[in-house]
Image (cartoon, rainbow, N blue to C red; front, side, top):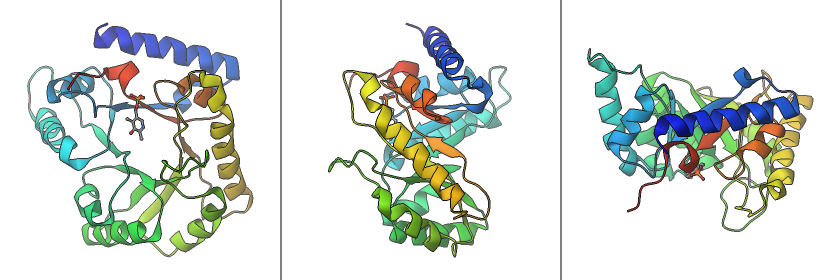
Length: 240
Ligand SMILES: *Cc1c(COP(=O)(O)O)cnc(C)c1O
């Protein structure tokens, strides 16, 4: 399939999931996860109108990041607008300074030491970084993220970091042969968000739910996702 066909295919399934669940397509953002594809495929995705781009390691992302910036600055007829970068991978504390300022959103904030590192760099740059708090809803050992019961205390601690904005919550569901089985994980994340808002844990209500990947995005949409992170199904996966 070409990129155009993959985009159309995802769009069709997304609209059907919206229709099933009474949701509006405009409330859902797609992040094109380019970690499995080349620089040129990444630029092609941006040119074709995928504004949000996700990567999970700066080392793999940087060539794409600089190329995209150059493309946006050029006056070539097919130059794309500025891509909006999302850091979706687990982030080592000492790497935060490479990410803050380059990536508009961070989806993997899950501990105080990382918040401190993000805050420090963001303060230097005089920016506020929208972050998603990663929650390990499924409880799998292999997954990063806060335990659900750690979320509320963590949110309270974050209130003293003036350069971090809590944009929402993020989770990864286990890979299931039957995507329907991911539903409790996504529902759990939405309930945690609603609980934060009921408790008025933040100055302004939290809306973001970053959940749903290639295998399970329709279930995530039905459960309230508003940021989908789509790699394989959207931009493909190149063999190493
Ligand atoms: C790789 C990755 C994705 C996208 O995975 P696909 O299954 O290819 O859609 C989404 N989220 C995170 C955190 C990832 O690391």
